Each structure stands twice: as C-alpha cells, then as structure tokens.
Amino acid sequence: LVELAFYDFTTKKSFDLLSLTSISDRTRLQYSSTNQSEPLRIYLYLTLTFLLLFSPSLLLSLSIPLPPLLPSYILPLTSLPFSYLFYNEARSRRRQLTRITLEENISQLPLSIPVLGESGRVVKVGEISKDGYRA
Image (cartoon, rainbow, N blue to C red; front, side, top):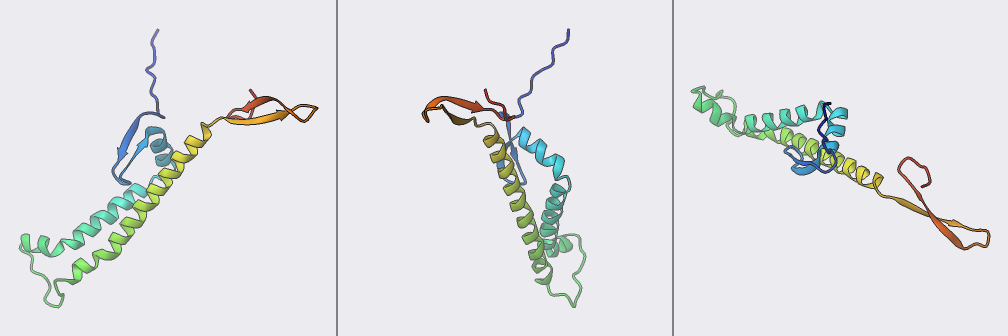
C-alpha cells in the first residue's frame, strides 16, 4: 500500500513578498484561487514605477539621448501615479490576506451555549461545532 504524505496547510507558514507578511499556505491557496490577476497588477505597477523613476539613467547608460523638449525630471515624476497604484494594490492584498486569516481563526473557535433546564438553571453546556451540530 502506498501511504500519502500529510501536508498541513494550516500550520505551515510562508512569507508573502507582495504583502510583506507571513501567512499560512491555506490562506495563500484560498486567496490565489479567487484573485488571480492581482499579483500581476502589483508586479506591473512596481515595474513601471522603477522603470520610469530610473529612465533617465537607463537612457544615458544605453547611449540614448533624452528628447530635447522633455526635461529630465518629467519621466521620474510620471512614476508617482504608478507608485501610488502599487501601494494601493499591495495594501488591498495585505488587508484581504489578513481578513482571510482572521476568518480561518474564527472558524476554528468552539462556541459554547448554556442550555437551561425547566427550573431556569444551567443544566449543561452544549458545544456547537463548526458545522452547526451540537456535540
């Protein structure tokens, strides 16, 4: 018989470079299955930010002269909107990952409800599991 290796998605954590946080693999899997284009947008905005920010240096290093009517500070200034879009998308990703992690942590908490007897006193404590059944 072949035994399958057990992989624990809830306790194994990895570092997410785009949100600069450590998250569980389960959170990463749930997030990436619903938000497939967001990492691409974040990388695109980051690339455009650095490309426009350092474009005068890149053009000079490639021996390409800047256009005479274009001041050298215009290209780096055009990187500001893209840097804002990068920051906004990365912040949105971090918030969604935090929300998913909190939802997972809350779903693992047991909920206890006191059960009242006929006399109005607490007779026992019934536990309600994650799927809604009383234990």
